[in-house]
Each structure stands twice: as C-alpha cells, then as structure tokens.
Length: 160
Image (cartoon, rainbow, N blue to C red; front, top):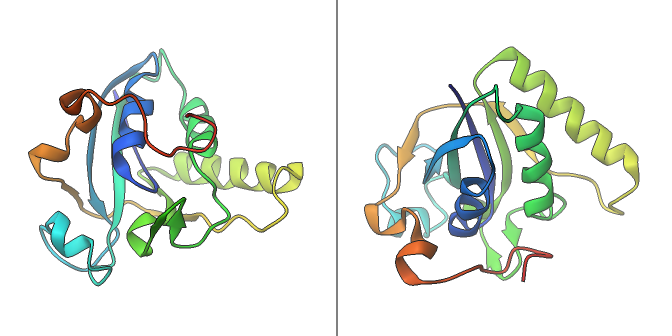
C-alpha cells in the first residue's frame, strides 16, 4: 500500500472522485500545509491557518499507479487559479501535491511540466509541489460528505 495527498479545492468532490478509482483503497479529507496544529474546519475557513483542504489517498500500486492518480488530480480542477477553485476563494482552496518519496516528487514535477508544455492552459500552472507535512484529518461530518448527504457532485469542472 502507498499514500498520496492532493489539494484541489473543496475536498468533498475531490475525495469522492478519488474513491471511485479502481485501486484506491481509502481516502480521507483533512488539512495540510499550514501552521496550526489540529485545525478545525472553522479555523481553516478563516484563511489564516495556512492549511489547504486536501485528500489523503491510500492506494495499491499494483492496481493503480501514482501517475494515474496524478492524471486524475490534474483533471479534477483548474491548476492555473491561485487560491481558488470555482466560487471557492482562499488559500485553503489552492492547488497542491504533497509528496512522500523522492520518486513521487520527481513524478509530480514531470507530470506538471508535461501538462504545462502541452498547451492545454493559457495561464501558468500554479500548483505547489512540496514534501508532505502533518496531515490533520477533518471532522467526521466532512468524511464521505457526498455519500452522507445523497449528493453526486459539486462544482468540479467538467464533472457536472
């Protein structure tokens, strides 16, 4: 088993999309990359903790590669908008990849560079690629939010 962590805007939709991938064995939403220990959703929403809303993905590399997870990540959001996704604005909605190994770092940077060179976007990709610090699990009511509330999607580009 392996772990990957991605921030791509509101974590509810991102979690749901990753959970649907064959080879993903689990996903949890939480906060990462900031300066507040054990933050709450209310604190993160103030845009003063430095944390991003993120999804920690557990996966089986024999069934899905890190490269496939990166491909899904890039398709789930607009990596050219700093500190926002759709109507959500603030640093907690930034685009970021948090890596756990040098191999993940290299693959993340290579995928970002390939996407930038593809010409898909007119603006530069602003996605942060950083070592994974402490991941703080979000409150239970945020976990599998869509399933708990009978929702199918949120405002993920191209998904609704």
